Image 1 (cartoon, rainbow, N blue to C red):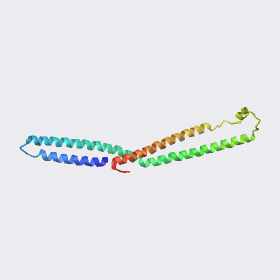
Image 2: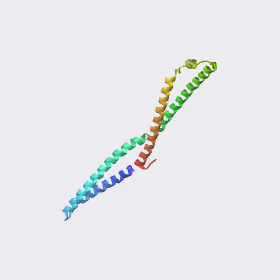
Image 3: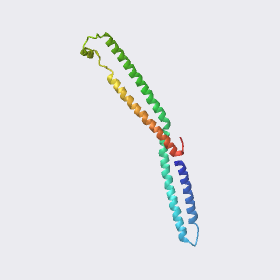
Image 4: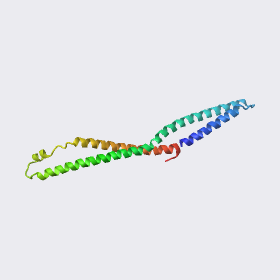
Length: 165
């Protein structure tokens, strides 16, 4: 759409410039009318030129945003691969912990006190690692969400720029 408007603005700029030059060189017995027309065409060509410059700036800003569209899919895939690896690591740690817990419970007698049970549970040494991985996982999911939103916004920018998808 911006490119279409830019084309129309350039066409208007050329038209008003040609009309300004054409009527400025014309002799007539109505001198006031010629100068009025010259002034109107001059102002219109100036406005068209200003519109062209502002549209070119808007197009340049939009093009830089659209150019990043190809990279977004790669970034999303990278974050998803990292999350898959984190899921596998956490799954492995939890399974090992549950196996250890199962072995610990298998050796227990039911008559032991709850304090004995509490002392038998080992402190999960990788707990801080799991917490850090979960924080990274949540941050990655938030980043994936923002990248998908950015991808949607780029589709809107493409439409504004050139009626594209």
